[in-house]
Amino acid sequence: MLQLALRLDSAGELTAATHAYLDVLKRDPTHFTALNELGRLALDRGHLAAARSAYQQAVHHHPRNAIGRVNLGNLLYEARELHEARRHYEAALQAAPGMAEAHQGLARVLAQLGDEPAAALHREQGFAARPVATRPYRGRAPPTSVLLLVCTRGGNIPTRQILDTRVFAVTALYTEFFPATRPLPPHAVIFNAIGDADLCASALAQAEVLVRHSSAAVINPPARVAQTGRAANAARLAAVSGLVVPEVRSVTRATLAQWQRSPAQSALRFPLLLRSPGFHTGRHFVRVEHAEDLQTAAATLPGDELLLIGYVDARGTDGLTRKYRVMYIDGVLYPLHLAISTDWKVHYFSSAMSHNAAHRDEERQFLTDMSAVLGARALCALADIGSLLGLDYAGVDFAIGRDGSLLLFEANASMVINPPGPEAIWDYRRPAINRALEATRQMLRARAGPSAA
Image 1 (cartoon, one colour):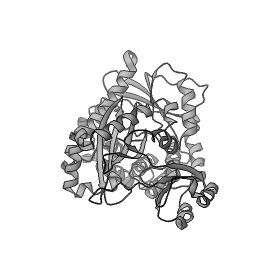
Image 2 (cartoon, rainbow, N blue to C red):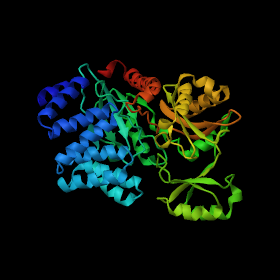
Image 3 (cartoon, rainbow, N blue to C red):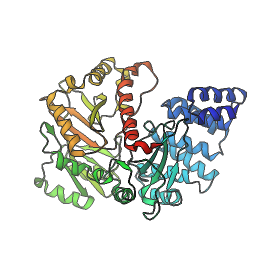
Image 4 (cartoon, one colour):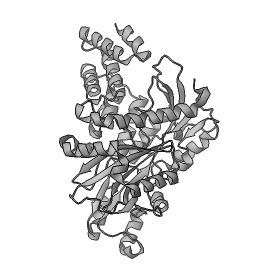
C-alpha cells in the first residue's frame, strides 16, 4: 500500500496519493513515512492545518526521528512560532547530531530572534558542506529545470507555491557557500529568489558573479535586486508623480545618537518608525512617539544598523489603515490582497479580515476592479514604480491617501503570494492569487525556452 502511495506521489497524482497514504494510516495510524509524506503533500497544496496535524502526529509517535522534528520545525517557522520551531530543531540535533537541515533551521530561527552570532555558527554547520539542495520532481512530463538562487540568512522570495514540483525540477543553490569556480548545476532558467537587498548584500554580490557563468535567462537579475534596499528605494522613488515616499535614513547606533542631537539635518519628525533591516512580518519594527524615547526603543532592536523611517498617517476617514499589495510579474500588475486594520502596522495575518464581512467585500472589489478602487493617479504611480524597479517579479505595499496619491510602505522582490486557507469565505481571493501564481510559472516556462525539458 505504501509503495502504491509513493508511486502515485512521484507521478504527481496528488489526490490519489493522499488517499493512498490515508489507506496506510487506516492500517497503521503511527506509520512515519505515511504521516510525513501526507504532511508534505498538504503543505505543498497550501493546507497548513492538515500539514501541521500530520507532522505533529509523526513527532508524537516518533519523537526521536530527526526528519519529523525538522519538518514540523520548518512549518512552525513559517507560521512565525519561532520558539516552538527552535525546540524541534534542537530535538532533531539531539537525535541526529550534525544533521544539516536542523542546523539550517536553527540558523533561520536564531537570526529572526536577533541572535546573529549563534545563527552564524549554525549557518556554517548547515550550509558549508551542503551548498546545493535538489527537490524531488513529481511529474510525468519532461520538467522545466530551474536553478534557484537563495540566501542562507533569509530574505528570499517564498517559492513553494510557485515552483510546482509536478512542473519544475528545482535545484536550490545557497550562494554564500557555493564556490564561484565550481560549475553550476544543469538548468534551463535561473530564478534569483534573493529579495532583501538590506539583509542579503553579500549573497546578491555572489549571485551576480555566479549568473555570469550561465547563458540561461535570469529572473530578477541580482544587480537590480541589490538596488532595492529601503533607503535606496526611498531616494530613487521620491520623484515619482502621485507617490508619497517617507524618508528612510540608515544609521548605526553610534550615529543614531548623533542624529538625535542634530535632527534639523533631516526631514524626519516624531513620531517616526524604527526598525532593524532584514526582518519582515513586523518583527523588530516599532513606532517612536517622542525624541526622549528613541534610545530606549533602539535598545529593544537587534543589530548595529537601524533604519529611521518617516511616519505617514495612512488612516482613512473611518480611522482604519488599509494596506494594498500589488505584484509586478513580467511587466504586468496583479492585485493580490487588501488588509484593513485599526493598527498602524498592518499585516494580513494579524488583521481582522476573517471576522469582518464588510472588509472582505472591500477586498473583493479591489481584486475584481483594481482600477476603479485605486484611481488613475495611484495606477500611474504603480506603473512608474514598476519601471524603476526593473524586476521580473516584485511587489509593492501601499495605502491610498485622501487626495488619491499612493502612500508607499515598501517595494521590492521579497513578496510572498500566499494562497488562503480552505475556508469558503476566502473563495473570492483564489482567482486573483491563482492568476499571479500562474503568471509567474508561465514566465519561468517562457524564459526557459525550448531547452526547458
